[in-house]
Amino acid sequence: MKKLVLLRLYIGRMIKNLQVFVRWGLCSVFIGLFVGAFSTLFAFCLRQVTDFRIEYPWLIFLLPAAGVVIVFLYRVFNYKNDKGTNLVLSTLHAKSEIPFKTAPLIFITTILTHLFGGSAGREGAALQLGGSIGQQLGRFFRFDEKDQRIVVMCGMSAAFSAIFGTPVAAAIFSLEVGSIGVMYYAALVPCVFSALVASKFAVHMGIGPDVFHLIEIPSFQLLPSIKIIGLALCCAALSALFCISLHSLGDVYRKHLKNPYIRILLSSTVIILLTVILHTDDYMGAGVPVIERAIDGSVSPPAFILKIIFTALTLEAGFKGGEIVPSFFVGATFGCLFGQICGISPSLCAAVGMMSLFCGVTNCPITSLLISFELFGYEAVPYFLIGVSISYLMSGYYGLYHDQTIVYSKYKTEFINRRTRE
Image (cartoon, rainbow, N blue to C red; front, side):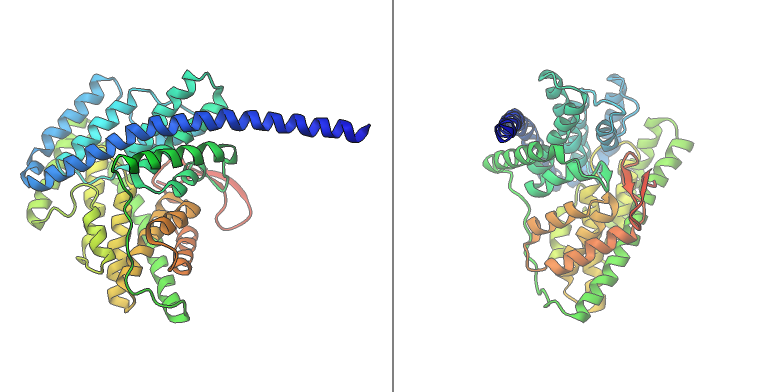
């Protein structure tokens, strides 16, 4: 009799779990298709405007006008306190909501930023697009507050996956980025499904992932390992510098240049002057061609510092985009330079530098490892493990997103529940 009761309870639980699986499976597939379609369109538009800007480099001189339009659009829509990707993370902590007007605003303004030569990435816009659309779909499906957070994470994963073509990393990134030390495993199945569907949709529409081929990977031995440790230590320090530069310039702007029009005009003018002086378009847009050259072993020595300057001037002035691809740029160029100086494969060091710096600025070691596997394959896995783990430990509590919470200490098994440093 007792066994029969236990069997009934077991069957009842299995039926309930199956209902949850079917519910989230259908919902996440729908989100993957819907957000994947928007993100694919976004990626296609970014590709088109980037090609157009490369063909007509004089468009950089219209950057101030584009900045004025961006500020005007945010004023017209009465959205003056834009927190960017931080708003999405704040939503995961149930501290705020993402207005639906965020989606078209970030779409248009990021396109304008890239068209006229602002130094910015694309994932910040993608995460806001995915989070905004996901939250609206959660309301449409009448999910409660906790389930709406899962839907937001689904949207983030779908958008990240469609833009970068890294569905495995995209599925985990949304679970990891909000609260460091805690993974929201309740969202695992929905994020996996939405990321895979969005990635497949993007590939089917011709938006393929960036996959890199590494040159001269040394065998895993003591001497190259020591050099990679040195690279990881440098990248940890550089990731803190990257975060401090962005946030410090933003603080200066907000304190001394309160008028957003003056702020964006000043930054635009400085960007144009630097571009003319340097006589290169390497620092416009996301800078993927420079990353590719670094992976091939070619780099301009000051490239990593200049990209930090250009990105800070762009994003902190009010232009829209993301910080992750610029962090890839900084890590790849610095890593390539490190490899040339220290006598170890510049290609390998560029890749390890990319992932180490990304880990340092996002505090997401698992995502960093998964991206490295999807972008570079598995031949250099030991070096990626060294670089990412050391960068995570040594970068301290700095981060790109001030609404990101460090739940557990990086140094002890201790609950600290603090925000990242700006």
